[in-house]
Amino acid sequence: MIDRLRHGALAFTRHIPYTLVLPQGYSAARPWPLVVALHGMGHTEELMRRFMGPLLERPWIWAFPRGPHSFEMRQPEKIRIGHAWYHFDGDQDALRRSMQETAAHLLNLHDLLRKDYPVASTAVVGFSQGGYMAGYVAPRNPERFRAAACLGGRIKHEFLQDAPRAVALAQFHGEKDENVSPAMAREALEKCAALGFEDTHFYSDPDAGHEVSAPMVTELGKWLEQVLA
Image (cartoon, rainbow, N blue to C red):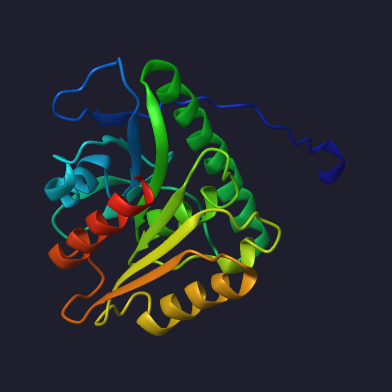
């Protein structure tokens, strides 16, 4: 039986949607800063857009892509489809490969947006799993991205050993976060600084858990104003 087995692979292509929010007074005659915002695991781009609501009146283009991986989110009362940026089962090499694949997808999106809109400097922000992804794609592509912010996740400094040290990195975290400990998030940012990332910023909301809290969004806005200036 084993001798009769054959294995193969066939590419499967999907179209992954995204939402764009243009700034008030948008004109194609001038370049605009771009913020790419990545949702958390099991979330949607629309939820991330609601999280960033207080910042959508800033003079920036906002892009809210959907994670390329879909999976069932089973709850007692219903089943819904959630979205993710990568697969992770504990295998770090597999995680790196999955993040590399998604990074390539995000670079393609960035190419598309720069083709269709006058984009100036770009930052990537993300919540939870999206924060992990933001902290991976931006540092490895400093010619495209000026900064990356992780909210409620942690920056995978282990995957940045061979990355350039050019981008600004920020961590926004809840002190009551039980999914990703504040100590772990702070330590990861400190290790990025030890690697040579000179522009790092840490903000902790004492009342927040694993969430995007209003104070975190306020501080994120202040930080984006600085890095996108």
